[in-house]
Length: 257
Image (spheres, rainbow, N blue to C red):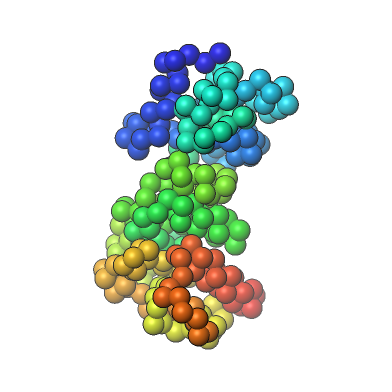
């Protein structure tokens, strides 16, 4: 069984400081841990520690037997280490994967996130990117930590496939300007339904309250919006808007081929 010291060490990973000191983060819940174990060793995914209940161990021995550090624990102990109120499956400590090299790709889409503060929104956006096959995501330094437990939970495993970069956005976009279209989601831009055929480019999504920062907005060459049809809502949630825009941009990409 897992010791009190090990429980304390894993619980400390709920804090950003300890995550980056140790270079790892927590994945919890049976479904997410099973997805992690199926990817273990591939795509840079490395499970460092696995803590599980006896029921999980008996049901999935073919997967966890490949892990080096494995402990049994009760459901109550799993709940102590993570954020789930009820976890009757497993919890894993995962090495922070390194993203693939960041490249300017005119024939595909890159999603750029400018100061996304809500971890639920960021996790959902990563899931959207995964769904639409957008493998390159770039976050500003003031975006919520991608390894925040709430981000990991909201991403539903997509963080294991879409590993965001963290960059100075004005510096990056100024290097890419002129080489590919840079679109930015705003309230008063061109309707996304009126865009010409585009093979790829950059889509910038801004902060939940303040939108895209002025320094980043200055580098956008095509402001776009999702048209409203007479409803009374002031705006759309940023994750919802990202999904709608990605769907339209993927449609345009398919038309270009």
